[in-house]
Length: 121
Image 1 (spheres, one colour):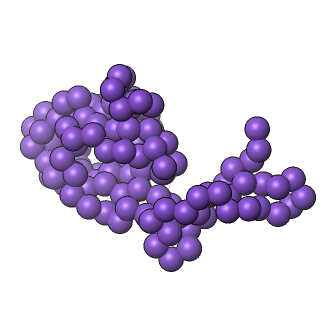
Image 2: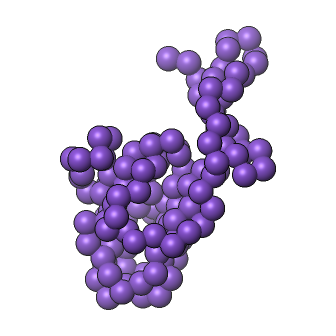
């Protein structure tokens, strides 16, 4: 399988494939999703984004538990990672967290805080 890397130019995220001779060819380009409000019970299509980050603003009244899916239909619980790289099964405090990329995402549960989402490097 060829090596794939991602780079950001302006507001575009570019997916590059290694041609095997120390050069890369652009495979896809998509706009980055700048931070935006997200209702986490709604499905987010993050399949094109290897990098997804959320920010929880305010203390949740119910812990957020996120799920991911390859097909957008069958969801399974997934981990989130805090700024220190600690893997979490539930988010109970305000802060910034990373979620799995290259898949569909949603929250199985969670309430009481504002959630912002950003995708792309």
